[in-house]
Length: 637
Image: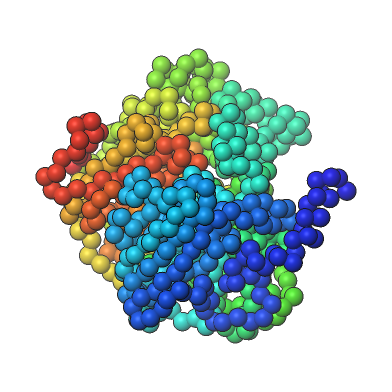
């Protein structure tokens, strides 16, 4: 036994007595059948129409997978306590900050007054060290949500928890038991060191990349390997941070043995999944047990039966399952297959189920760079100009590791000439026939494929697809080829129809990055360079996002709903977070109905920190922006 394992095992033995104290009661592995609905933290005050909680933010030593770390905890636990309200309540939440640094709490997905949203330096000053702040807001919705810090890297260190709002009326779906399942990721490294590692070498945590050994074994063709090397990219660059440093958690517990929840045979069980990760996308399935999706992002949807769900960071999905008299594994596999979180559903204490084998690592394809096989055929790698940046014509230099990825074994890469590729992003793309750039495309419809324009956004953006299009009907990289049904965004339909007003104008934003330099932004600029997205109270916007990178980006708008234009007409669903796939063009409708500055950002914590963040500045009609910001406001349509 080496020294590290000795220390780990010794610390585990020494801490077992206190282990239950670091996991909230609702999240502990079941030793007895609990209440049909977890009640969560006992309110400080509960009376009709008013619910008060007290939350304490502190640093607490605890165990993850047998190793001891120090987390930023809420009431001493990771995840934080479950907060439960009923639609129509008034929430009063006092946050006591015992840290030696500022903190904050953002109520993810909740529609509330601007000064209660909890984003420091945007709509409140933050919660100072050793001080108390009181949040007070009306509960105007129902569903599964969560809360987390918006300060520094505290979210990565454990500052998050689940929040459930019961509807004022009856639920539209029948179920007998409810369980909360919070997925997250943990690293024993200082998150600042993690970021430094990525900035120094973007593939620092990618231990799955192709090597000369793969060439010698015949798994990768030599010409394909050399082509990727010349482009300074890797087709396995799926996640910035992997299981090389991450421990993947389910309800705060590492996979061995993992969390467990008990049910009575014959019960219909509602699982409220929350992805509270800092960076990890999870593919969630329960082998042998179909899942019926009934709620997404806190909003009811028409039931959809599926076998697997890709959960973007910050998304929530509610499913109903009908387990038999046996145990089942709840398997949440990291998108890059570098690890997994795991739990068990069982009718009796001590029962377990087999843990599925991890699937092979996925590889990005030409579809992820906005090209098809026909467009790529016949190109010659040798003719590529690697001497300069995108703006100088050497469009491939310094390219995003994920920005052009294709399967390493794809023979169609051989003999390609990348000089024929369109590398620039566009602030106004060249529209294909039928694309209405005035914003008058019928509401709810899916955007048409669109050719990219000439604007490359400079060295902050490594490259861009030749063509962008909707990919809402696609399951995503690594899914959909094994016979399992995978939930896709086009499956989602609101429970009830609602007439959708046509947009007044369109805002187009390009999600940009340079993986080689680990730079992230919007339209090639960081928040410091271009902070605002101006909006006018009462207008109806079409928000179109174009992903110029090869990474998936979960984009979140605070304070207002986004209506996903997924082709379902009057049944398009509301969301607070949307995953934009590589080379994808996605559009959403926004009813601009809330004054003030609202954060809009990628929910990959490290991308947001480096600049993929904006403030949606909602002003009354006729109000003007400060002169230094007015130049960035270019109405379309």
